[in-house]
Amino acid sequence: MSAQSYGLDVVGQNIANVNTPGYTRREVLLSSTASPDPMAQGAGVTVDGVRGIRDRLLERRLQMEQPSAAREGAIADSLSVVEVAIGKPGESIDAQMDAFFSAASNLASDPSAASARQSFVLAAQNLASGFRDMSVRLTSARQNADTQARGAVSQINALSAQIAAINGQLAQAPSNGTQSLSLQDHQKQLLDQLTKLIDVSAIERGDGGVDVSVGSGRPLVVGTDATNLGTVRQPPDGLVGITSNGLDITSEITGGTLAGYLQVRDSYVPDYLTRLNDLASQVVTSVNAIHNGGFDKNGDAGLDLFTVDPNDSAAGSLQVNGAIVADTSLVAAAGVNATGDNQAARDLAALRDARVMDGGRATFSDMWGQLTYTVGNDVRVAKNEQTSRQAIVSQVQSLADSVSGVSMDDEAMSMLRYQRAYEANAQFFRAVNDTITMLLQMVG
Image 1 (cartoon, rainbow, N blue to C red):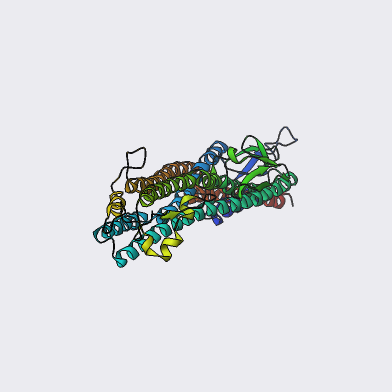
Image 2: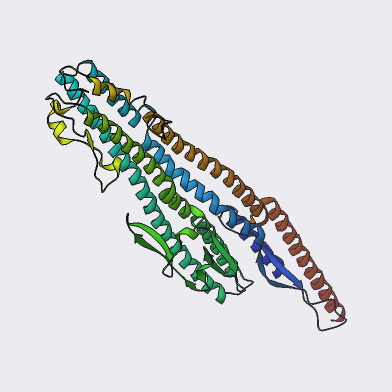
């Protein structure tokens, strides 16, 4: 009767935790107790303990799939912010380039008009400002990814310390008791959280604990010892590298949100910045070549319209020549030193459709369009990959839940089975008691 009552208690525990995340269904382990008397049928039943119903293969498969889904999710989230920063077609740098070339066309219509010269300089300033702002946004996106990577490392270290602590508790807890099962449930939850942050390899210990490693077998948790991952700022941008025991393992991290942030920081955004700087550099080169070859209103040779800092990026340091901003008569609209000539202004306006990018195959607008398309395509690919991999994770999770999760129908059947067994045992003892009472009455 005690064994069946214990079984009812376990069923009640399962039902109570039907909605508890990470809870593993419990099952009572019963065994027949032999009697020392060879003529006796036995000495009843013994409760050997409780075990959790788990499929280790499915759990390992889940730990393998989760890092990839988490990585693509981090990439998609980070690049979605970049996509917003790039702006919609016709509302970003492409619009400012179009306004600049339109201002050059208006200048060609009346090269001596002060208003046309002022409008041209203002359009040039807006274009330079647009490039600088875009460079700042992309650089900020890269720094944000770096900050998120550092935050992920802190979370990884915290989870590793908790897993190591649980390893110590499991080593002291009875292997077949409820305390051990609760610790293992908590350990599984921590491992699930860890695999979403970084790809790990977990090896189960004999006492129920786990040893965890990352990258090329770098120890993260060994027994009760946790090895913290480090972050070291690296030149020239001060972005962090990930270290283990002083060794740089950044390139070994391929899964989890940490890998996603690192890819955004080290691959995606640098590519966008390179494209942006190439575009800005070619705009400067093409415009200055025409402006230098022209003549200003005073009959002097033209100056550089745009300037860049040689120690900085082209897009990040693009400015309009301060002398021209202060005196618009220095705008070189003429192609020859003759009053009313507008050849330089017409040549500047013609740059709108000139194929000076990509080896003479693309215009400035084409190259900006390629940049915006690349960002949008990267976002779509990451989201599609996330959806695909998350579907796999969900399927594996469903299979694992079908084994480890609590089913109310199954528990109702188990409860009925233990209840009937308890009642049958009670009826047996009642019959034995009645028999003994009757026997005492007969001999008394």
